[in-house]
Length: 202
Image 1 (cartoon, rainbow, N blue to C red):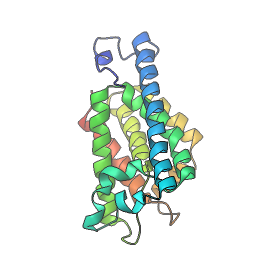
Image 2 (tube, one colour):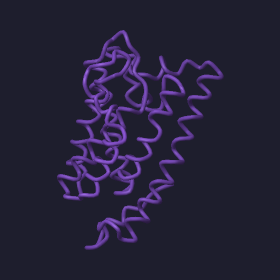
Image 3 (cartoon, one colour):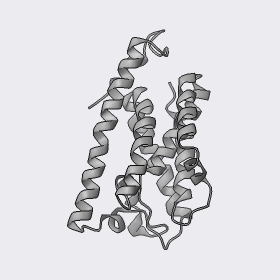
């Protein structure tokens, strides 16, 4: 499903509470909800068929064999609990990123994956394999925060505040704390999202 970009044109099209605003958010929400089952199918196939996708498609820091993980690691998860934990914030944040236009969404997501993935590959622990969409989630968080400031769209900041209140304990994942959590992916994803908000601003 693709969300049209034309809702951002015209003097009143971006106004919070307008009919085009709600229509764009609704379409984006459906699209994000449709994307999550794909991640579950990938995890189910990996688990039931023993494909070993995590070491094959994850980011292995400073290993040439781990570079392809920059593309594939956001699609993979350590287990179903890991995927469950990422699903809701991915839907919430992704909905408002996508609602601003499908082209901006694609370019911003690609940039977040590139910056976050390269950051993990350069400074991550070479003894680890990093998988999961949390780097993209933190990227969307940083993007909406920066977009609210750069474009003065206060509803973006409202979304950030809401998600921050719901998942405030997970935001500490941007700092080195849990050895089993890639804080590098969270940090560089967040920075990538903030830069993407400037590069692909309205």
